[in-house]
Image 1 (cartoon, rainbow over the protein chains, first blue to last red):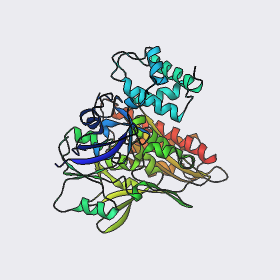
Image 2 (image 1 turned 90 degrees about the vertical axis):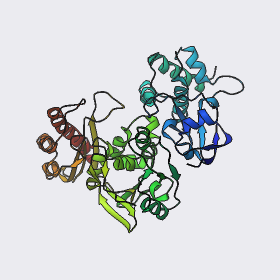
Image 3 (image 1 turned 180 degrees about the vertical axis):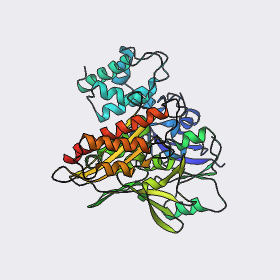
Image 4 (image 1 turned 60 degrees about the vertical axis):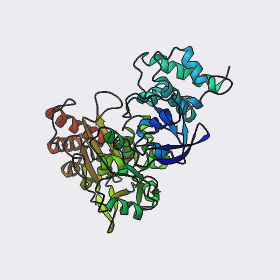
Length: 159
Length: 289
């Protein structure tokens, strides 16, 4: 099957790539664009490790075709830190030891950023429901929830 | 995934032409992809062409009119749930849509897709049936309409003929005396498949008497079912405990579930009646607002 030419933006940079129609956005990010921060867990939309934003909306990149990114804006974990250093969400995940093996972490960081943009001051229940599609098999979720709460505080009142 | 071609038709006519191309019997419609891509990956479908229908104006339109509401088939659930006006009008339907999957799934999954996927346990389906939704279908000979309860014809099978696609759903607009609700039972609080589900919509008059009702059950038969006997038990009553119990009994009687790892036949028959009573009480309280 002929490859398709796709123009999109990834983390605000215009990107062009060729892909097979049956490549997922996750495949394209990792295998064509070298952005391996986004992880593959289940490949069926259950674990959230491959979470990215598509036009600002949180999605599983394993359930998006690469060709569907045409003309859209994709946001991945690589776009979260800036030249000055880690984003407060990333910093708070570190400080709270909210990760062990790290496979779920990029998806959790992207999902947390999407949450705090929508709701800067979420309660614990809101956090737990929002992140219910991001599975972590190492830490359990308490440290993750505390990291999100700390990040929300930090973003509201930067130290 | 096996290889396939990808098409994004710019109009309904183009979509119908692609889907009805006689030489190509293997077309698969794509909206949010949260079921379709999982199925493609599990190799149980081998489409030659994926037809992405979610860029069409007709599948994306949301129109709250004076007497009906049109919901484009491909609108993601998250988008519907961010619409405060729609949520105030159809809280039960939007709660049903909101139960499907995670935040990530919500960003893509649509109620039109839930209907087309035709799972016995699709949460939005009983809520759509209870709300009297009518499917607006485009095809080679123009548009036709079909009641939501007639759209799903078997496990994983819908009523679309070759060349047809679901454009959207037309729902009678609730009045200030209308309430709807959907409840499902799952063994945990989130991210699971319904063991049983029940959608209810009622209208009440100024004396609290039920003047119209529709009740639908899910996950307890090969397809979601409209239960006219449950509605009949509610209409004319003040939606008191006796009427709710009678409606629940009618749902239990209408259920023909299977036993599987999520529940036995007996358990599902009982639970669907309980869900009916509770959903009817919520719908009643919303109708009395």
